[in-house]
Length: 222
Image 1: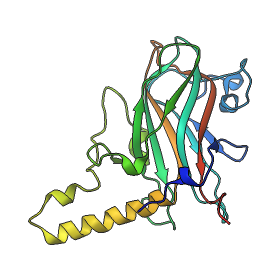
Image 2 (image 1 turned 45 degrees about the vertical axis):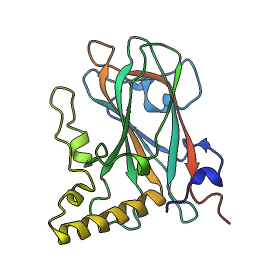
Image 3 (image 1 turned 90 degrees about the horizontal axis):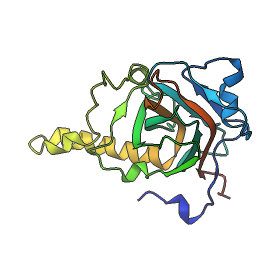
Image 4 (image 1 turned 180 degrees about the vertical axis):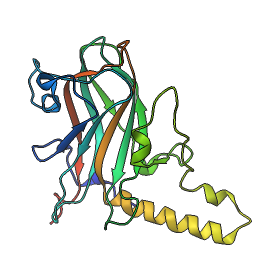
């Protein structure tokens, strides 16, 4: 059974000075990625035109802390430049640098309104997401993902379980499921927001403020 962090931990802001922030594009130097978390209502990040646009948060790692479990996403857009369809992906923490450590897992979609006010979304637990909607998307596929030409979804983790005629396939699937549970228990090392559509005709996205709250695994342990 996967231990629930809600029992022993308090939610904290997961975006710290040590968090690495990457964006797909920037309109100019005055609208850079640092403006996403500077706390000023006067500054913003604005992308160049074209879709999709992305914001990636890479959380710091150390020997004393595992990954994070995000629970709420808060974001303030500029009306008229809102990412109306936003895919939220997570990258699981891996115990080693084994192949595939750049794979991203789709957590959910959120659909912000075309308004200026701050909007907050509750994020589901990835370990509780039905396998029929949970897909693994390699990082290379995310860069080419567009609404008009969506990449084909990968096979769900436990798809082989449907093949009851193959004992070998069933065992392989169960082993893979156990591996996923282990990764979930260790938390996640990064989060990516992919804006697949925008209220701006040219596909630009403007964000004034971004916050992510959740649990930092390992910090509450003695």
